[in-house]
Amino acid sequence: MILVDAGPLVALVNADDQYHARCVAALETFREPMGTVWPAVTEAMYFLAEQPRAQEALWEMLERGALQLLALDVGDAPRMRELMRKYADRPMDLADAALVRVAEREGIRKIFTVDRRDFSVYRSTAASVPRSFPDRRQDLA
Image (cartoon, rainbow, N blue to C red; front, top):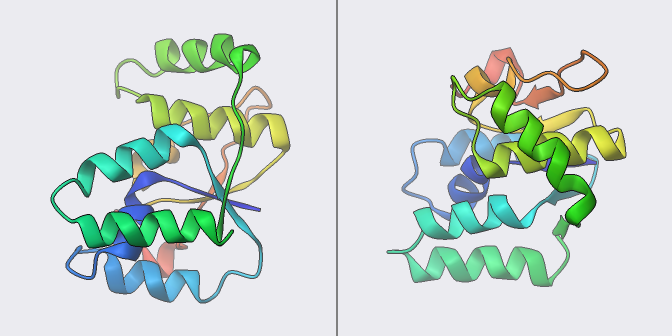
């Protein structure tokens, strides 16, 4: 599975986004299912607030299963809080903490993001960093 951050969610459904073409091109190379978390969807919907058609496209991705929602529960909260404290100097937002937590919990090593600077710094409990997409040949940050 590939976890999807809010930035690519916005770019994929908004043709005017600066990262749209590169995110669509990257998406076409994926052979694994995509998943995300509610905080990333919330952030994307916020950025798309003035674009109801783009919001509808994001809802469609969720409803038809092109994008799976991975659950968070109260048991994930302590680790997310710990991550946000650890990276307070960045600062780490809730969506990023949720994605890193789910990556740790589910053993997911791939994150589709346009926020490479932050995701290149985040470390999980295993002292590893999830690999972000697109790769350096398609660097988006």
